[in-house]
Image 1: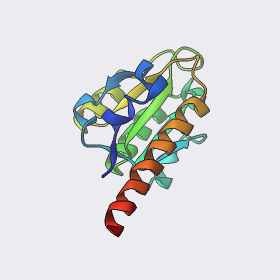
Image 2 (image 1 turned 90 degrees about the vertical axis):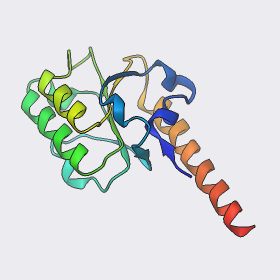
Image 3 (image 1 turned 60 degrees about the vertical axis):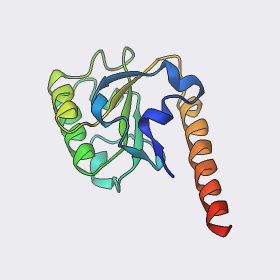
Image 4 (image 1 turned 180 degrees about the vertical axis):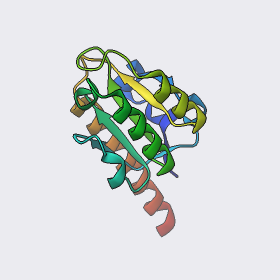
Length: 140
């Protein structure tokens, strides 16, 4: 068993998260971990299955880096990208939306009131619970 992005969005406060792009990928992108990114070229470190979070600060004046990030994350099979809109980044660039839709890569709008820990803790807890239940079933 595994946690899809669609299932992740049903966890507690994550129901307030809005899907901006890549809706077709919600049911088949698997979330293995949650990562906060603080560098524009974060895609080079992706192994697959990451739900990446950003405040958007890195991309406030560099929309091309955001488009490149979406492209590399989608190609490396990251689960989704969550971005806070309204504080540092006013909107997701149209080209990034188009790429995300092309690759069925979810871009999620994180409400500005939500702290990263409000997302990280419940998602990681769900992943741990799923993995624990899988191990229990294997031992039976």
